[in-house]
Amino acid sequence: MASTKQYKSLTSVRDQNKAKQYFKSKDEYLAIQLKLQKKLLSLQQQIHRSGKRVIVVLEGQDASGKGGVIRRMTEKLDPRGFVVHSIGAPKEEEKRQHYLQRFFSKLPEPGKIVFFDRSWYGRVLVERVEGYCKNTEWQRAYMEIAAFEKMLTDDGIALIKLCLDVSYNEQEDRFIERKKNPFKKWKLTNEDWRNRKHWAQNLKAMKDMIKKTSTEIAPWHVIAADSKWFARIQSIEILIKNISI
Image (cartoon, rainbow, N blue to C red; front, side, top):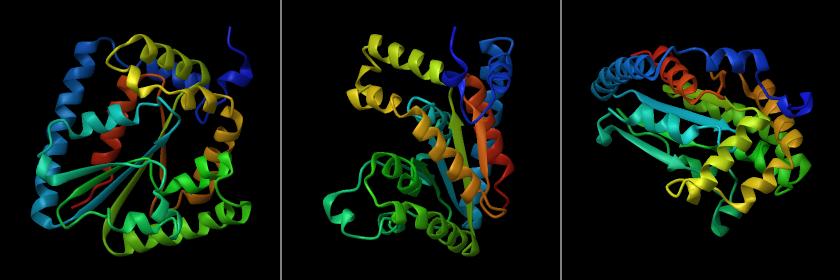
């Protein structure tokens, strides 16, 4: 039986259990997903014609399903109309620049959608927890990020921010599954297991991130992600709902 401490996450145990029971069958899930994907394709065509620019940011714990959500979002889209950026550690030359600078070259062109698998929020998440920046730097970053996102939205960019939340036990189950699956084993590293030891610190950083950077112009949408099916459907629904042409 998992301890209460282990179950602590952004969403409640009740919400996670409710999400797991959301679909009666895989066929129901796939039917709903396909319907939403077709709506998203139609929306992409409108984005292309109107010149609208869209940014979708995904954050969440390791193995929370960010890649799986992006895959289902983009599965039926025209590949010419979107770009996916998987954000890792900055390169040496980028470390000598302001941390936001490397994202300016990744902003969407007119009529395009850009997906960020992790983002500029690394400054207040991993960099904060791992001590890669000074306390004064990550504390100042909340204000800088808010100003950056206001600049984007003032310029007409639609910014949708999704935070996928898995429980401590579910993350472990997914790690073990990856370890056993030869097609997923490459996703799991010793770093992932090490990061689990910082669960409480990472959770505190995520809570602070949401509290201090969820604004009227760029709110955070926190999604219970112990059920991959639920997280994918919810994410696509939120994306469709928050893009106005």
